[in-house]
Length: 215
Image (tube, rainbow, N blue to C red):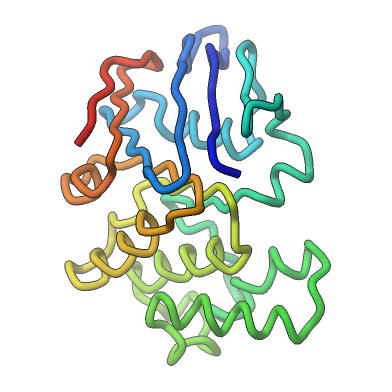
């Protein structure tokens, strides 16, 4: 997958447009930053791209072919990092990373290897067997990143992924997200460092595309 194109994306919720005629594209190796005030539509747009929120109008093209975001094959290619972690309480860090892999039917050996590699990538191999309830907010954020990376997604979507991270871990996670030359990456953030690291930036304002500029 080398190019994702969104055309006229519109989402109506509660009788109003929370996204209105949003058109853009993102290419592999050129991470795209979404910025805008709280409530501007960044999270809704990510959830549309992840197949979690249905479109009222508009379409997506993947490598010039039409794609339905809710299609299981497409959704299996997507990794989503949630702003609120979305981790399962009562499970360990490793078990949280493993859950989506188990749902996709990977065998036990591959799950173990992917979990180990993903947690190592975010420098959390030492807490793999600890309950996520006992981890700090920053550690839980990194578990969420590891969970997304373990699926080896072709499309990686991240919602404020650096919000709770200290400077060292912010740099580590930012590098993991934007350095891939083959993955399609869209990051919603108002963090200046995230925006500066992305070759392309889109600004949303009340669900509409306000500006597009190279960084």
